[in-house]
Amino acid sequence: MQLRYAMTGLVVALALAGCQRTAYDYSSSPNAGPAPLTAQPVPSVQGGQLPPPTGSSQFPAAPTATTASMPGAQPGAMAANALDVTKESMVGSWRVNGGCDMFLTLTNLGSGSRGGTRGCVGELTAMGSWEVSGKQVLLKDRSGNQIGSVYKTADNRFDGQTNTGQPISLSR
Image (tube, rainbow, N blue to C red; front, top):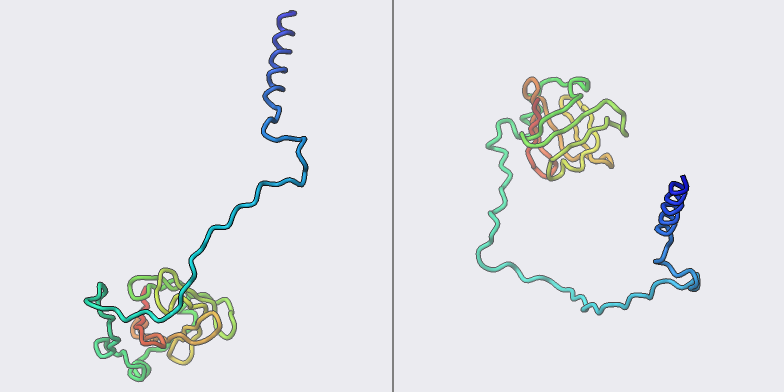
């Protein structure tokens, strides 16, 4: 039985010895912190105009926005041939240009309803709301400024463009 008490005492002593802190010196001043870092030299910044690129570019030429190849792409022609649209029929998820998603809700946001995009590029990344105006659906940024519009061209299909001419095609 004595051996058992001796072993228990030894285990407790070892455990307490392992709990002692030896990494911090308690006798040092409490206000003493680590030594400050020395600053590294930084070269001066220069400003000016970059020269124009020379030689052949590694990037292809930017595409030109041609609305003639897209049937009914002219806003006036689309408005004349557009089908009637209701706000309720727009609610839900839409595929934009076959590559990203647009989500439209009936939650009020300013003069329109809340909406947004995922995975889109260009002006559509800033979309925050939408509203139906006549036969067109107005797409707006988070500040309420119109960034584009679409018209119903078929069941579950809308076509239009952004203010800068980027074509928009919504489908389900």
